[in-house]
Image 1 (cartoon, one colour):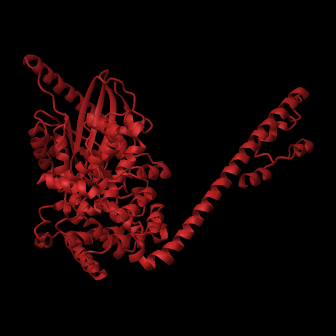
Image 2 (spheres, rainbow over the protein chains, first blue to last red):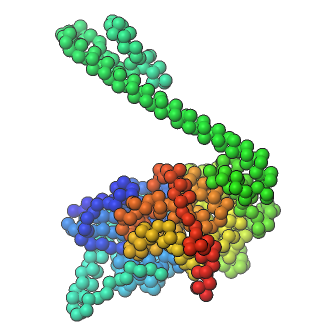
Image 3 (tube, chains in turn cyan, blue):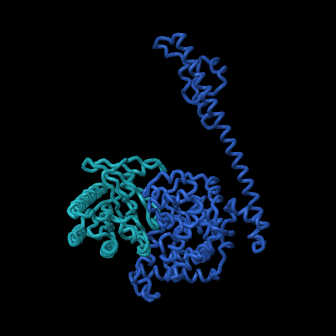
Length: 211
Length: 401
């Protein structure tokens, strides 16, 4: 049973009330320009498609509260601008991420071949063992599809990534993909805790500091 | 008035006209049906009930009249305010056109003009004032714009044919940086103020925006197109003719702050953020401490604000007023505006945690009150221990070396 509640639905300016989530994760969205990162987040938050979204400049932020398997999860979602030029700005945020959603556009081969580039960025910037979801967006544009599902699957398998195809426009697989990612993040967190329990000195958590 | 008219035409014919007369009110649509006698096939209304209905009806009418009166007064007041505003804009236009613009060099830095400037430049002269204030240090002519545009068009043609040769010969940048190429511009144009519906495919300014951004990548291939530029060009297009918009655009981007950001010169950007923090701490020490505690660095919100010169995060009319003073005071006003925003929302922000602050500041409320906003900016002191913005910045640059 999954219920979702977009924090942004609360009136602007009021700190929203999802007291004491059981788990809190930072999730970074990366991928080429125009693959649909912001649209995906908008769908996740408002459950509609907004065709009138401004291009992202630098970073955008969103909070999402979601109940999965009877546990309250708070997600801090970081939406990054896709242009490569911005990477020197956004790369510092890789370090803070517990999970990364790497998005491409199934109607654009370019965006798919750039997945390799983004994977390198994640490798360089993020902590080892960061949970990665490879997400092919725009399944509603079936007629313009240039990247077969199998290619996405193959790439995901080769790099051991979680894989989904979705559509921010139709809503197809949007919450399913996020719920799976949350479960994966939870598994990673549990593993980390177990490891920490084995080591006498508690494992140091990621530092929140930038620059 | 319209409602009243339609109400009248729908008025049912009543045998009890006298009831209506002493009401002295034209009922809207069918609300007065309650006063009618029941149809003949039903038992007649007891007098008591009829009386009650009359009473209730009269009460409703009185309430409605009160409401209407109140609304009429409100409308009148709004109209008066608007007339007053239009009058003052009208007289400001005259002052700008007849006194200031013809004597720009001697007058622009006078106190009187500076004060008028702060009130906001009337839209009809805004473009002219911006052009003059931004200047044309680069000496760009309309011809140069046309040359750059012609080159951009050549590239688009060869791109659409599928050849990449033209790209490669161009300073060696483009081939590697596919995104800096004209493809991304195309994608971003439709994502520039999509709500206005004027820059999108088929919209009246689609081609203009495309041309200016394309011409700029040919004029400055070393900078190329960077996301955020489309918003700046769009605001200029709304206030200037195409070639003049290009001239203002190129000169604006050539200013040190804009160059630092659009070339993503990380070191310099950090210097700007550090200088900003000096004034942040000075002006809003409590909020500054709260941000520090939450590890909220200025890049989180300043990047979007500076890259788009607030055009994305503020309502467009407010953004234009910020631009007005930015043209007058230069980069320091961008940071002063940022502090003004933080000051305006200080109480709310001190109650939020990291992610909510970030979310709030990148999506500012749409109904930002403009007068309070500028009062809040005016209250920010751009002086820290007798040092002005430029001095603080210079010191920080020096320290970094």
